[in-house]
Image (cartoon, rainbow, N blue to C red):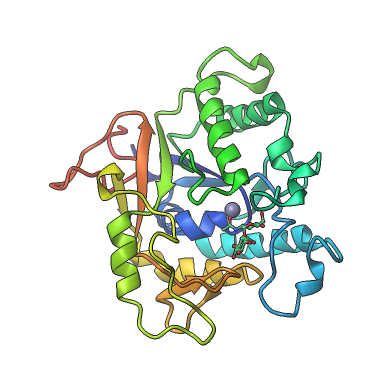
Length: 293
Ligand SMILES: CC(=O)N[C@H]1[C@@H](O[C@@H]2[C@H](O)[C@H](O)[C@@H](O)[C@H](O)[C@H]2O)O[C@H](CO)[C@@H](O)[C@@H]1O
Ligand SMILES: [Zn+2]
């Protein structure tokens, strides 16, 4: 398969997720000529805001953060080489549900309250329109347990399966996606990345044991080298300025909780649909499109 023919679809919950866990593969595969589409399911309306400049945009005050995060996402995707954001159901269709246990999950427009059939059929239509060779989404716990991430995992999994059948006949011609992956953080990469961080910026803290999500190394099927595009990934992180701050020197980043996380030179995945392609001596693929002729 030529690089230009390769089609990758990534489905994420909020603006910033695409960069934080898959910004490297987005930039790498765009640079290699693949067709890369990022679909985001909410505008991130319930986010906190780093700094004072845009602090009054939050949900409990002007409630304009979602609109502003469209700009941040546009800038971040530009840094990764993707022309424009794409929101499931159109910008504003579903709202950020907030962290687990917060009242924002009561909002009828919240992603967690979406009509399941409507959400899955919208995802089926995207899959059948784009006919991706590879789809990437979250693992069953949504990475770190955010309700919106868990719902994205469940609905993307259902949609990839349904898209291959004659279900949702109004959503386009069936398409069997060859490979579906979960984006994950490998335990040893996180451990070693944290150990390599030098002094942290004032006010930052190192994570406690187990505070950051990761999976045992043996669960990782695919490790993609993104060392060549880390500057683009850092620029994209910085574009999400209300959500993410990159430490001087670029080795670490933090969200609004100022818990230090390493910027890793590999991004890790678990293949959950499809066949493992050519693997290296460690038994891992090094390419999401491995094995696709
Ligand atoms: C990476 C991600 O999914 N961010 C979400 C998350 O934001 C976190 C949340 O505000 C938490 O309370 C903070 O401690 C943490 O620092 C934030 O990253 O949840 C938000 C609300 O649903 C969402 O907008 C944001 O994109
Ligand atoms: Zn998120």
